[in-house]
Length: 233
Image (cartoon, rainbow, N blue to C red; front, side, top):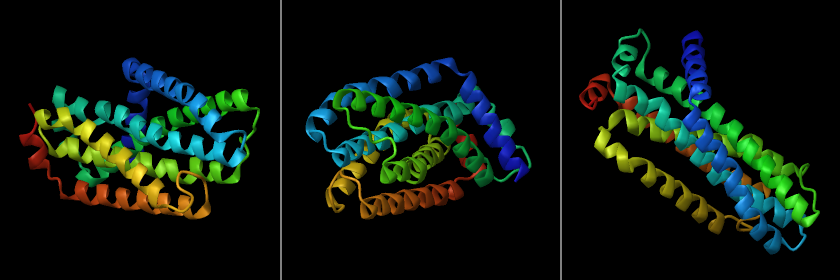
């Protein structure tokens, strides 16, 4: 457990020191909800449930994208500069290394998602006059569903970045991001109530997020140190 905390803490500190990543995440966290606020406000027509569903619908892709932004710095950085070889020599399993890095990415990505959600709530409340800050299902969405999806996206992308070469990683991110967004749209289509908020919908998204996280952990467990060394440029 101490090793896990050390690895996760290290990644969080590095993320907070990387100004370019923080600026990119901050711009997206503010720009995307502001651009979406007007369409949500018009479509909701003053209905609090529809407003909450609209906010939930944009925060999930934002969280996934934040995981992708911070992943590039956490996993690819060390392959580019060669420091991953030093980490691989440490007395820690590769899966524990992956777990620490994934959590180290998830925490700052989740904080940025919360900032984006706050901007969304403030902007839409200002446009519609409808207050949804205390909507129970929306709070559940922020606390229980979105973090799992962020961890799943960070874990999947991170495991793939460790296993694949630099050339493959150039297109990996876009493939995963579009794949996650496609999955979100599909789940919204098949869930009862569509893109709205309901206990059943949140349960479906939570289960899907946990399944993706389990898949990420399984893939990470199949990656070997020898495989990673062979992909270092």
